[in-house]
Picture 1 (tube, helix red, strand yellow):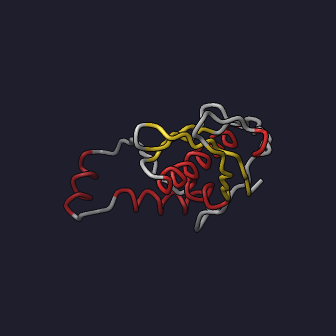
Picture 2: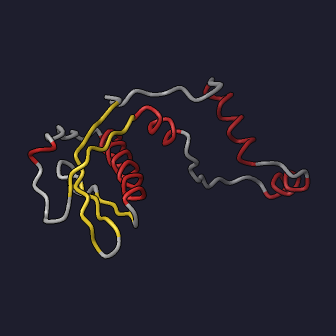
Length: 139
């Protein structure tokens, strides 16, 4: 699914807001202002759902906002995320790889100011026969 909409509980605490998602245990964040809390809630929801998708875990059905119980002073707001750009961003994030090359080759490459990451990326793309990133559908 590309679009998710979940109710979030915004609970004021110590000069900011704690945000939880009752349907998604462990998905929690905070912000100093309501604007920051909402932005952080979108990020937390997107990363939490991406993690569940990546692991092949079941994603809970969203509850109706009116069924959510709140502590006194807290309120419920719907938070929406579009997963396609999140999946693309996560697929394109940098990952660190450790590799081994002969010292003499390293010395020559460093003398020529070679960008090792770029050379490896280009070589891998050529080796596996791809030009650019192609979005993969979640399993």
